[in-house]
Image 1 (cartoon, helix red, strand yellow):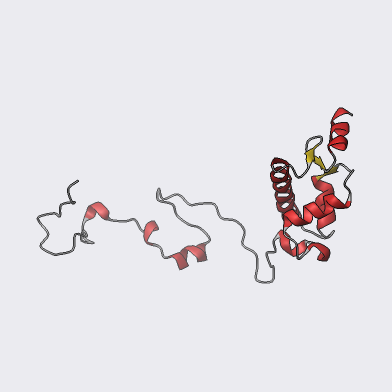
Image 2: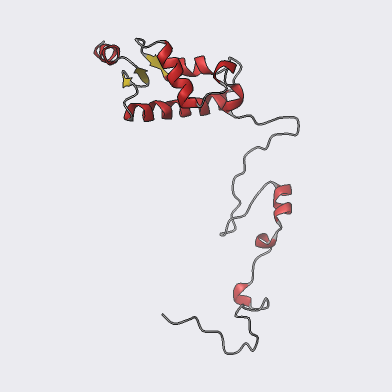
Amino acid sequence: MQPPTVDKQSDSASPAPSAADPSIAVSDDETVSSKEQAAKGTKTSAKGRHAKTTRKPKADEQVKGWQHYIRKEFAKLSLPQAVASVMQSQPEAVLGVPEIVDTLFVDGTPQSARNDARNRVSNVFSIGLKNDKWYRAKKGQYSLSREAAEASIAS
């Protein structure tokens, strides 16, 4: 493989093209600083289209993740440990994702944080199922008892 060649017209040691080269000119949209973009609330893509932006919280609103809403008795546990704890407290029961979310999180959890928590609990169940920690009953329901899970499926 040969090294890239430098344009013979340029006498400078730098292989970078000059700013006056019209082949590399940028439009005004592409030269807007990031501070100006933030002030506008839009960003431009390479094709010059404006990307959609999400609503930014006001100064008095705080964005809090699902971790903020977990009950105190589960706060020091990882989410997989907390789910396993709830499952172990009811070993013969068939529990669904909504029941686990209700048990782990406070009642005033905002819907967005609750949805994120539900997705994460569902992932924990999926991984635990692959690792033979529990059994799947009906869709979205799990149990520590194989018999309880099979009975749930049969009903």
